[in-house]
Length: 142
Image (cartoon, rainbow, N blue to C red; front, side):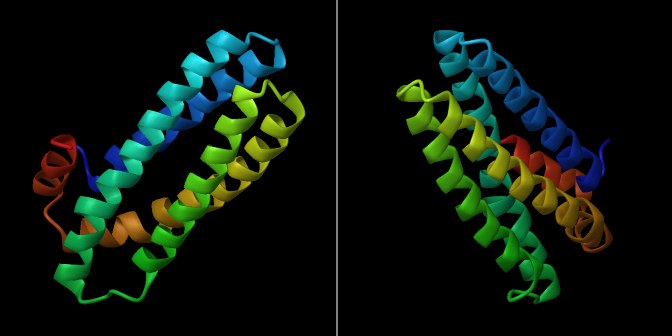
């Protein structure tokens, strides 16, 4: 069975790999394939955010009473990431390589810093305070 940390780090890597594929396709001018790959990336990333926002964060906050700490910051960064995903999608629709890649670079900087905070601080705190199998099962049902 996974710890919360292991489970969610694996999802981070999967999302990173999906984005890398989109970037390759945009760079090669394979716009239709890039659009399809982007949908997979977007769906997985937003599903990951949903798991955290609807299951992990409320469980952590309920157990620890910490509501104005790391989960609040993570929600704010998820909102920023969603906005960047929307901008990338618009650039992709216009086949605007330069805007897509520059927005994607901004997204990757944000998400790498975000993931590092989750992986090194929040997830270990969750593993310490929560029942990992129960929480992972709840996230899997979304």
